[in-house]
Image (cartoon, rainbow, N blue to C red; front, side, top):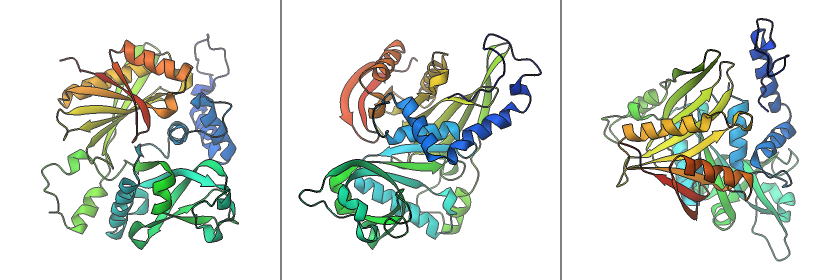
Length: 368
C-alpha cells in the first residue's frame, strides 16, 4: 500500500539504475491516481486501513485518509473536519453559499459529505426525495452522499447519490432537515486550504469592515506551504510540510502538517486546531494518522512532538489528542492508539463525543 517502487530487495541500497531514480516517481503517482478510475480500489484501500476487514463498508474518515494519501496532487492542501450537529452543518452550507454569491470560485469553497441512516424505501424514492420510513421499512444502514445545494433556506438539502443515473433525478436526490435530525450520523467538511481562510489574512481586521470585493480578493490569495528537511541519516531525509487554514466549525486557527519522504510519499499527517477563545486555551490534535506501511518508523512520534511544540508557541494550557470512533475498534487499532498516547505522556479520558465522533480524548500539559 506504500506504492514505493523499486526492483531490488529491501536490504539493498538504491543505485542509479533503481526504478525510484528512473521515472519511478511518475510511475508511482500514476499507480496512486489509478484508484480514481476504479471505485472498488478506493473501497478496498479503505478496508485495508480500518482494521475491520469483515465489515461491509468503512467509516467516512477512512475514505478521507485514503484520498489524502493517494491523490496527493489534488489534495495537496486539503483539510477535513467532522461535523456532528445538523444545525451546524446547515450554518456552514449557507455560509459557503454566501461566498459563492459574492463571486468566490466553487473550487475554492468548502464541500460537504453527509452520513445518515437509510431504509429500503430509498431505493425507489420518487424524484430522489427521501421520506421517513414507514412501519416495516427495513434499515439498510448508514449511507454517504455529497451535498450539492439546498432549497427553502436550507430546510432541504440536495445531494448526488452513488446509485447510478437511473436513481432519483438523474442520480440526484433531496433530504429534509427533519429527516436528518432523526437519522443523521455525521458529516465532513472538506476545505481546499490552498486558498481561502487563513489566520494571517484577517489579523487586525474588524468583522464586517471588508466589502464583498475586498473579501473575495483576500480569500483568493494563495496560502503558502512551508517545507523544512528532517535528516534522519545520510540516505534518509524527511520533508515536513506545513500550511494553515481556519476551522469551518470554530473559526479558529488550524495548522496542517504532513511528512513526506524523498520520493514524495505522504507518510503521515496531523491537524492541530487551536482553541484560542477557550479558557484555558487548548490545542486539539483532531487528526493524527500514519499510513500503515510506514508505521513504527517514529513518524507519529515526530508529528506529536511538533504538535506539542506548536501548542507551546500558541501558549496553550493543554494538548488534547482525539481518539476517533473509527480508531477505537477493540483490538490492535485501539490498543495501538492507547499505548502511543500513554508513551507520549497523555492521560486518557473515555467518553463518547461528536465533531469528531470519538470515544476518548488524551490530555497532556505541554512542557514549558
